[in-house]
Length: 60
Image (cartoon, rainbow, N blue to C red; front, side):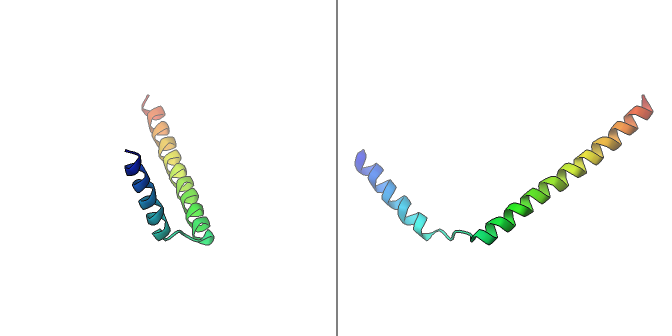
């Protein structure tokens, strides 16, 4: 059993060496994009919620 775990760990290390890791600039750019996209979606949903509340207030 320990031999299988050892083989697994060795193969995992080999696979991690082949990974194409993003640069710091790419990571920063992707992070800013995700934050901006999340804020955009939050604003959009907030506007939709506000409109629905106004329509509901006028109906009730």
